[in-house]
Image 1: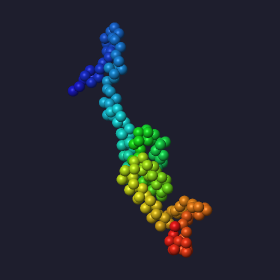
Image 2: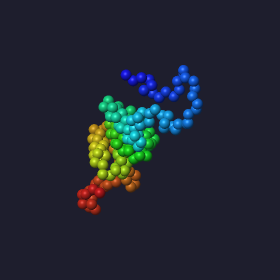
Image 3: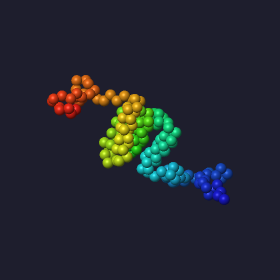
Image 4: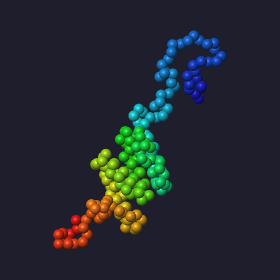
Length: 175
């Protein structure tokens, strides 16, 4: 069994008279454990560990269908998790937030968040498929009259930029 003397360095015993001052030790010599030994995190790994912790938290919340909690805790990522955003590791978190927004029927915000992720990483298949699914979900919600899709106003203030009545100028085609 380990004794107290073997487990920790004793600097000064109370029962012995004080010894003359020893040369000053540097800070690394006085620490019993290094930060790596205490926290298990090597230099540069903190951001990745933080992202893993956030992703595990989001997975736990989504497993309980707590979509509003995900959005309120982590959106916008630039304000809530600036270290991930600065290290360019926030796209996975943004994708999960967009998924939660889709469940909350906040399709416009979800689509704009996913479009920003695609601008950062255009070859990411997961982000593109998530954008397609979110767009499909918004169309399905509009079909079921859960939301109303207004669209962007066209020229003249109309939301319908195309001609819908056939005429001799377009031979029955719209557009």
